[in-house]
Length: 189
Image (cartoon, rainbow, N blue to C red):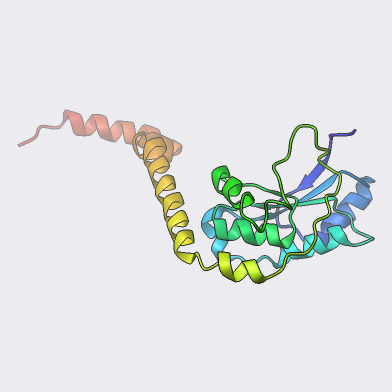
């Protein structure tokens, strides 16, 4: 069972998750995810994420690894790394790679490889706040990154749904087809 693990990535109460693991007899290889869809990310604080990290770091912890999702802006990537996450889920891996190359992170984090044990704890020394003010001034870049993501979703929605309206509301497909046929058979003035 070296690379088989357990993950609870919904936002359930952490004590409920602890009780579930206890009832199931699960005592190792436990990941805990915390997050929200990226379009709501900036509206959510990271208190639950930090709580999961404190549990992971405690002697009585029931979590081996903590990851954050969906982390798409460089601002939120930095904040998650500073909090001490073990992993990130993102739609923009190039941004994570870019942040990992920054002076603050390049000696503390690296991308995982297939040879890494996904459950062994990597201890990271606490971050100093001097970098935080320097790097987090980039709210303009975060707004730009969020705008790019939103425009991407709008484009995907257009391509996948509006070009094929029957897929948007499948239950209305027949009435939509009937309406189109009826419209095509009517005389136009």
